[in-house]
Length: 83
Image (cartoon, rainbow, N blue to C red; front, top):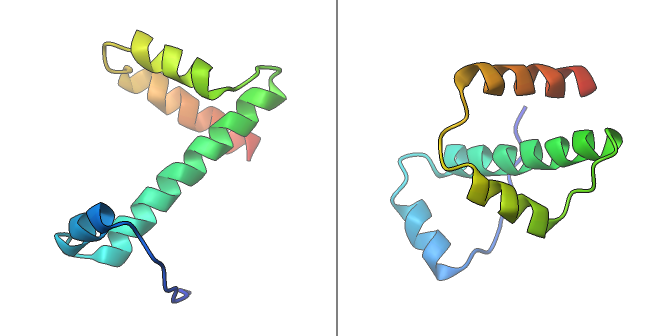
C-alpha cells in the first residue's frame, strides 16, 4: 500500500529531486536511511551508550576507511534482532 503526501522542500533539494528519474523512490530511500539511523541510535541507547551529535561527528572523523562488508552484515543482523 502507498500513501500520497505533499511536502515543501528547500530550493536546492527541489532542484536535486527534479533531476531524479523517480522522485518518490528518491524520497523513500532518504527517509528509510533516516529511519535506519534512528533505529541504530535506539539500539545503542538500549545497550547503555549515550548517543550525541558530537559523538557521531567524532566517529565519522575516525572512519577514514570504509566499514568492511562483514561488519555491516553483522550490524544489520543485530538491528534486525533488536527490532
